[in-house]
Amino acid sequence: MGSLPFILSIGQYIAQALLNPAISSGKTAEWAGYLNLALYLGQLGSEANEDRKKLNDQIAEAVAAKRGLTPEQRAEWRGRNDLVDQKMKEWLAANPG
Amino acid sequence: MNRLKTSGVLALALLLVACAVNPFKTAQTSEQKADALYGEYVIAKEAAGKVLDNPAVSNAVKRAIATKGLATSPAANSLHDAVIKLTEERDKVLLGTSTEAKLLIAAQSLEKWIADAGPLIKSFKTAVEGVK
Image (cartoon, rainbow over the protein chains, first blue to last red):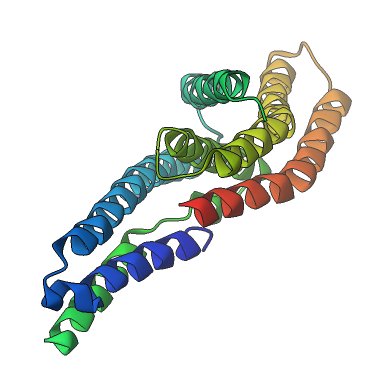
């Protein structure tokens, strides 16, 4: 259920976008802002859900085979984490507090 | 019209919930739970990485998320190392080049890292989901 708050937050933004009076009153800039945000959140959520489904499939395969992930699968997840770590280090170095 | 829109939003929300999967709940053994936990961490981490590219998010929030992400990595990577070590020890026992005692130590180490890294990973995921 860890993804539920995120899903609800997306739903909240989409609901705000769809139900906002700005839509019917012709405030297109405000509407466009909500829509852009909803699309951005939706894109992030969609990518995360695809990855979560991929991970779930890998775990389900491992359960069926009575093992853990394969070394190649583990190496891929580790490599992806290392890449983000590097990006975060570079961002912090370029944006000191 | 509003009722129609609300229905659409609810349908979309239900669809999103239906699409959501939970690899940690799919996992059955400690080894699989550790793999699921680490994978979930990486997915949240990559989402955090994308937040860094979003000009609508303030630098203060980005800094907090990046700092928390980097602070969580050592425990998460230790969890990952522990599951790899357990697999290696099990293979060695099967080959007769290690002992059941060493396998037990590796299994206990993995349990410890699931207990230690799990809350940190969940806290990081919550922080990232809050930003998004």
